[in-house]
Length: 404
Image (cartoon, rainbow, N blue to C red; front, side, top):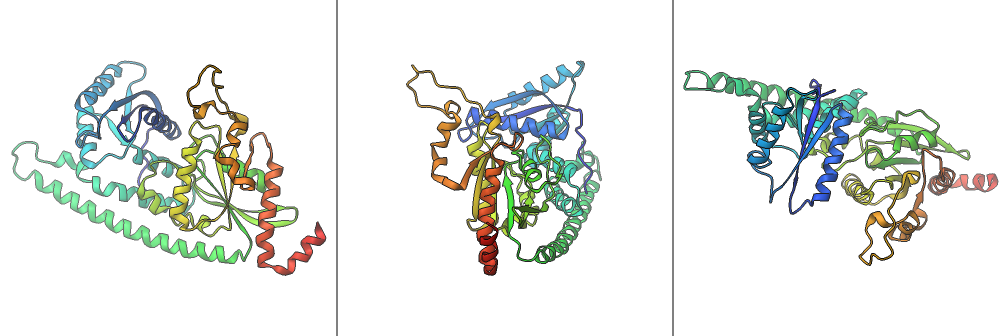
């Protein structure tokens, strides 16, 4: 795997844009999520910079004035207790933008994609996940090779200075292309092994936990399967898919905990990790966990639904679990305020009467950490799994009736 980008304990600046397509409130929310990503990677965010532009600058992402302002701040902090070691941009930078920004700031620059790749590289535990991450890293690196060889470019009119740089770039490009080809072959081989493993599980009903990153999937997995899957208040705490056998009232089924989704997920990672999502594709039931305490849980819900549609290509039986009701907060609207209610003005009971009310038994409100309504969730799972189980094994219907 490509050596991890070390940003542990480095002080970071975050940079984002406000555009006609991305309002200020949304841009600030994305920067807050980027700050959480930076914290997960080990960086300490010192300041956030936002600029309003019609579109990203093709050369420097932000305007020249804003870039100069960032450079001045970095210079000012050099003698302080918190010197800036890294600048992270909220969108993927082109090779040209990356080179121009680094030339101007004279400091390490990352974009959102590179930061997520770094986190994935640190979180990967199995050979499968490590191979997937390495493939995504090389695919991200390939178009950015030219900018890494500026030290061999012709600085003045020196004869022979350009050739070695161009030659080295071509050598590196061939090495990376060969490595990408090898990694893809390795993934195909592992895919075949995992397909065999899934076939060996027989016809047991499969349930997959899905959701946005950091919504409590691993905590739910631990509760339902009585296992000890790693859970942490960090983004992408779970990267490798975990499958456990769960038994509810003597009814066994398989439950898998999958990697969390996120907005602006790099396309290279989506492609590399599609095989990991085979557990989702082959699941009989999806348990979509939503962090209802998050201010923009509805957008997170839609992001996951959109990704699931790309992965599964068909609608699957889904139970929506609105988690973290113990952390839910709202601001009651003033009685004299006649303006339209905003999302933050709705109580939990009022939210239940909105679009969620149309889901009926397909949704439930729980708290995994406080174990609120977990027994009700188990009952719903039992009934759904039993229906599929009886359909596959009709002769077991008598046993269920006798047991009940």
